[in-house]
Image (cartoon, rainbow, N blue to C red; front, side, top):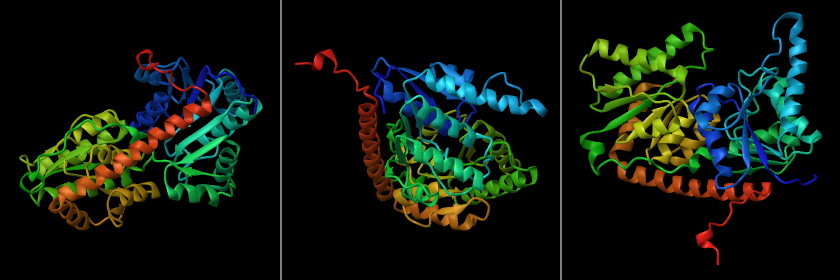
Length: 397
């Protein structure tokens, strides 16, 4: 590939839509350019939101004014392809910073797989390096989705995945290339809270519960079932004498969280349940201050917890939760989102509380190793791009 000076880097992702994990992943990607004179460009779903939140120039993934309905929809698709080509040509390198962007469950080929395919295709045409960094991958989805994902993974110049199961999924998609495992980029963040007081796990335990809404696509009957189960879990925890703090991982989750808390308080106005307002992974991390355990569905709620040294139990829906929880605790602490037994989760929470000092120490040790690995990877990526940070004047000989 022809080498060219890297002055502008595009960061592609499903951002601007209120998903806290996606925004944290973008922020971690943008941090690669800290201390350099390289200009970032976010390629986002809602660029105005991204520009306001991250303070960087942003463009839409699709053509912003192309027709979408009826017979003119095909014209819109062609316009999207041309728009992506112009965007890629305007930069010197392209980065996909983390997220589960290669997870196919419930994804349509015409959605993000289509955009990724043309992102990778135009990167090859215009000879722009394409780096996929600590991405989540599975082999789920329709044949069309899997085929598009496989081509993008094969065409990229550099691919790292965030866990071993993602690496196996790359092979299961038929992609024959070296793939390295590097922890999720958000695991590179520093903790922002202090550990709870020694012994407080037994005398004044606080358990956080993270709930979710399926991105607004879940049927009302399924949402009601999940809300009822979340309410049951909070009540089961409260009944054992712990305080509960309910958190979310995306803006859309708030309605489920608010309804679960409302139901708990309606039955017991004095219930020791809180609902802090959070709008980012950093807010979630701060909300976990003083918490001893997190039980959560969303992956990046779990990430926020372990970076703060908080042991975790997952009510998950994908292998990413299993991988993270096993690495930071014990196998068996991941439960299916739709079938978990609240009593089993309560037992595991109290198992953690009973040995909290050792459990938290293990989490902090693994988090420190992952943080170092992410930062070492960041240095490697900057070398690949040729945008190593300048040596500060005070450090020069």
